[in-house]
Length: 239
Image (cartoon, rainbow, N blue to C red):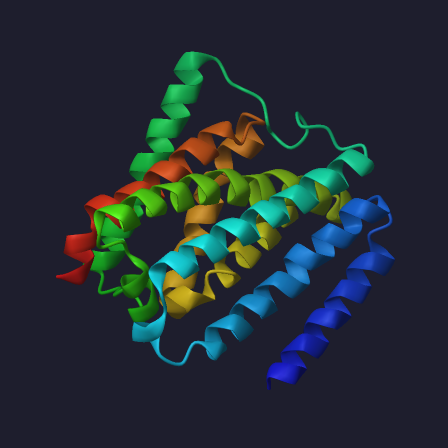
């Protein structure tokens, strides 16, 4: 079954590389990596973890940070080689009031979604609960993970991918849908319900990128949501 998934992913990569003529080659290759290979690799990695209790949190944090910065670096290099500007990817500031408004609204929406889904019966996966920080040092490390996820994941999924998928499909709506599905899929370690929640959050975080053409509020909100969820709501999640 795992081999079949990799074959399907490879087929998707080939299709993207052959059909997305509007996307320059460097950006096309990284788009294929993010859309087809990364989700399958995430699922495969989850299957390799047999005993959650034996997974060191510090190692998991370091691995996540390193992986995200490598992917963000690849996307940045591909964008530069493909003539995609930082502004096109939404890396631009908004006026202070607009920035504050978007950031607060997105953060409140994300936390509100977590609360509603929890009350609806959604429970966190054993792996996600295990990865929540316990000691003071782990909390400090988790803050670094949250910042990294907020910056890198928004750059990848609401910045780079929205540009390249819009070029490939000719539709910003299609780009949002595809990037949202991929974002949810790479959070497979949270199990299906958590992956769906991540996808819904991704759709919400795409709003300023589409409406205000900036991913900076999404980066701020994403970081805040992760920090609040991991540091403040931890005890509630375990209750």
